[in-house]
Length: 475
Image (cartoon, rainbow, N blue to C red):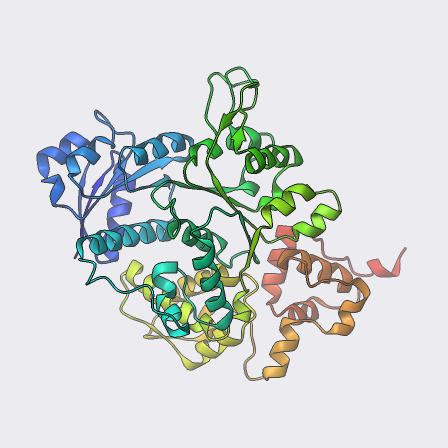
């Protein structure tokens, strides 16, 4: 059982992290400062050290010297990202931003421990990564690449990842929300020559438009109200490594022009500065939107689109991946049982049928949430279809009906073509607005392959009001 040391001065965070790791079969010790860790433990004896960057007394980076080769994972706030990158240059194995996602932390811990174990083994003991064939790729899918699944579309994706990773080419990852685009970006980085340098991930949709240029490219003191000191941006923080821009379709046009300069000239200019500086950054972008259409309508720079579209990787939706959905579901189930300290659960036959045939409009993210809910609510060894909370009548629908529910008929689509390049949310909005005048909510939900509750929730999220009764008839 791997032994992990947590060094964190905030008791709540330290206790929560300890419980998370112990539920996943790790032995855990803890300390509130570097000094306490030194006094209580032999630091080099641990398999991994997880430390906050800012601690009372000495900073967490002091543990890098004391660890004598034991990997140190640094935790830091988003605002201290620059310091986290500096700590990696000092020898930290990786960093993770607080507040962290539990799965993100567990994945980082598992990856670091695996790499440490492989580093200890001799070359002859290491598994060969050069064996060809689809079977090798499938067996390697959730190891080297870090993604579960062995359907033909995913095997093709793994092959492309291996070919593209060693290059510095810009990559555009396309796919619906929830399909795992960040996992692909991480695989591209981890298999590249930049793997030991930072991977900086930025969700362009999560940063206010007024701050995006400053966050990405940095600013000088006095560049705008509140800029009391100069600050490096995230592009600069990724120097030598990889910059992953998720939801790049949400990037404002002004920031797009600056990003184009990074790609063309390999340099940035901070907001408020007249000086440019060189950066060595590989760019990986992702989007669920059709950038080509956005470029034609002036919402996205056409020259930037062609710069991004050097290598395009398409992630299939979960409903297009055949039996992968069951493999992923079982993996999530095992992980949730371990995290919650539950005895091993299994899916009942009706649950497996529901998982296999449901449309999964929210993709892998929706599947994971459904399984987490089922594990919490389950009171027997078997998880039934009802516990998954997905609205699908297995007895009333045959295979043809499933296909019809997943994809509304061609006759209904002809009035507003094309729809094939729309994102999932764009398609949803397009379909509801087109049909809500002559369909009931039940009929809309059935055609979209979702429950009425899910339909209502998406209306709320996307701001699509429900037509008042009689609205179509006019005054």
